[in-house]
Amino acid sequence: MDKIFQDVADNVAWLSGIGADPTGGTTRLLYSDYWVEAQQGVKKKMDDAGFTTYFDDIGNLFGRVEGSTYKDETIMSGSHIDTVVNGGKLDGQFGVLAAYLAIKYLKEKHGQPLRNLEVISMAEEEGSRFPYVFWGSKNFFGLANKDEMADVADFEGVKFVDAMHGAGFDFRDETKPLRDDIKAFVEIHIEQGKVLENEGKAVAVVNSIAGQRRYTIVLNGESNHAGTTPMSYRKDTVYAFSKIVTQSIDKAKKIGDPLVLTFGKVEPKPNTVNVVPGETLFTMDCRHTDEAELHSFTAEIEQDMKTICAEMGIDISIDLWMDEAPVPMDPHIVSVLEGVCKKEGLNYRVMHSGAGHDSQIFAPRVPTAMFFVPSIGGISHNPAEDTKTEDLVEGVKALTEALYELAYK
Image 1 (cartoon, rainbow, N blue to C red):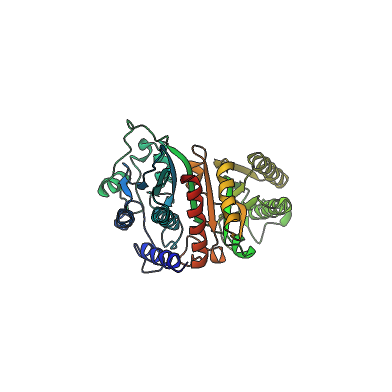
Image 2: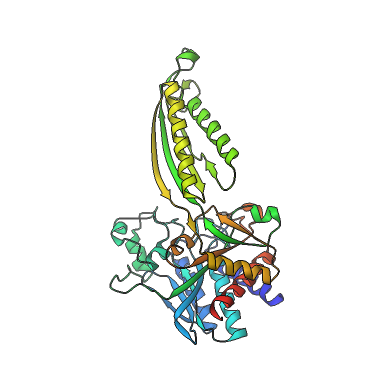
């Protein structure tokens, strides 16, 4: 236990130090110098552990231990190496380090597996530098369209193509066949929520990733003088917005978990003290693990909004700009992960993920499941992001045993 504890603590400190931001946290954006340094550093660690390492065309890093018997079957684990700006020390990178340590321990203790074991350190997931998410995993499955990236630039005007070439990579060679050897993918990640901490659990088995519907909604009424416009004559869009929010959230609370509803951005106009707001723009984010329930609830809320606005003489425009279906994890892999938790006597629970992960790109294509470890205070994407090292160790132990079940038996 002491060795694992020290290994986890040392590796987390090492990797989060690459791109350490003077204002706190870690900033390691796709194809930046710090990103290259991190990928090369992980590669060296895997080289030193006796893994066969290589990059694909776009910069996903792989570390492989060959199997003895089922050479066309690979058990893969990993996550993404990029961060958000001023991010924490665990999001993404813990999954990479845990996979490396788990496979290293298995190799040292049990020797060659029956099936190939492979770490993947994915190039990008966050979309923090360029307006594109899951660049690493989408390329792995041939889902990324290079034509979409031709004119994309970052916040400093650096073109995506130039940054990629500068880091030594290029677009995927589409003449190469996609891999068909991945028999299981297991990702471990911090929860980014408070459920495990509040319940005193050290680890979770994730059985699904929630679907998401995101909206931008604009209410148009009438701007008018705050002193000379009687209440009965007003077409006040903030008042309409407040009724929409109250009614919608009351309904969401009544339904309860796993449904969640968020009104996150609000822009009233003219946004001044003495004018009735004639326009209000706001966003709505709704998530559920059941697609039918997600669609049913949002359809009801949309109709409620229209009814409220019609009664108040206000026009409404509803733009549904994200509609991602829930992604279930593979029942067999979930069963394997849960069996490991029971066998090892881990303090665990089964839960869904309300946040998106690379696993949602993998799951429709290869058998996939996830582990979560707790997040202190539920904080993520923030320099304060943290997890007790003891809980990180429990996660590495769970992942190690899961990979043993999948690759050695």
